[in-house]
Length: 80
Picture (cartoon, rainbow, N blue to C red):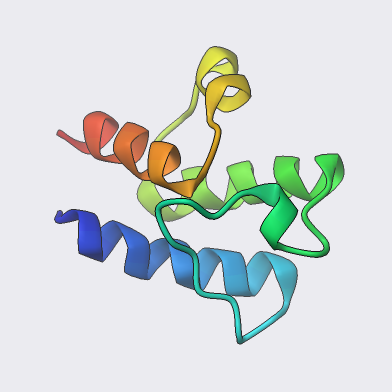
């Protein structure tokens, strides 16, 4: 799977979790960029991403992700 394909799927997950069709995530998107992205929604988001890609993040990976680009990198590493 390419990085572009990962971002395509991530956009779908973000739109579903935050119930907003206008969301388009980029390498630098953070919680500050999405109005409803708080700690509770972060848990829902991580669960939805794990389900979409068939992976499991470690707690260390979750707490060190600074932006969606880092999330995509970890996803690609897990899928490799």
